Image 1: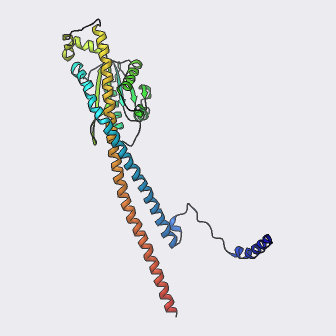
Image 2: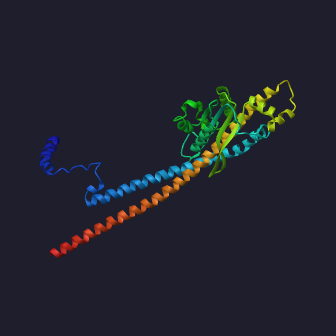
Image 3: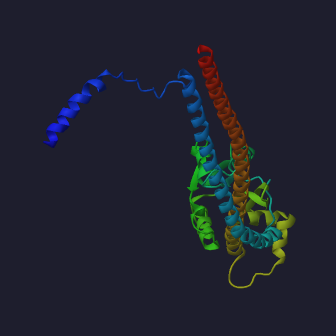
Length: 325
């Protein structure tokens, strides 16, 4: 009986449902201004409200990234400052001659694996390309060793054939000397060089970093330069103890110097990356706040215009009814 009553009720309602006109669904790709006046006001307000919500979410993300970068910077900055004492004795002993003319040069470019850190990666790439042009020649060979995903993506476009070795995800784990010394050993085993030129960003402050080039000479070049004289000629004034020869000592010194310089360069570059990311995220947060202020003003104007228009329509309708009486 219940089913029969339901069918009778359905037959009773069917003519009234069929008589109603079916409104066409609004097209999602149609313009907002193709709707009626009320539709335009409601849709425009909703669009502005959605945009405000997305800008607020972006601002939350940039503020969180700034805090994370500041925390990582505090953890790395002290270690970077302490690591400067490792390579300074080598510079005092062996010197740092970036303009030395050799046949085989290797440019080690240090960059970051992640973006959103300003122009630190493009800066080291520009310096590396300038060093390539300065040291390239008909009888000279210049190769690249790329550390970091960002420099790798840039250099592969036009210098793919000149890249001997690429290393990525170096900063995935906390940096230590053992990890960097393994990297330095891999570079020494896979490339032949007379001079290694490490290009990195030296950290000065959160808003300032300086592109720097550190030069490490091979043992053969060091011995040749010491025979010529100059600052390297002072090596002969040191006494050698033990059974090692001068060549073996220079070999050990060159390897240890390269690992120490690489350790400091990696830490300095990590500090510069975090400082640049802090500055970039702070600027992004401020820009998001300014955009949010403009959107809030637009939203309030749109809402006030909608209210004013509705009041005018109500008053006009009331006036028309009074005039018709």
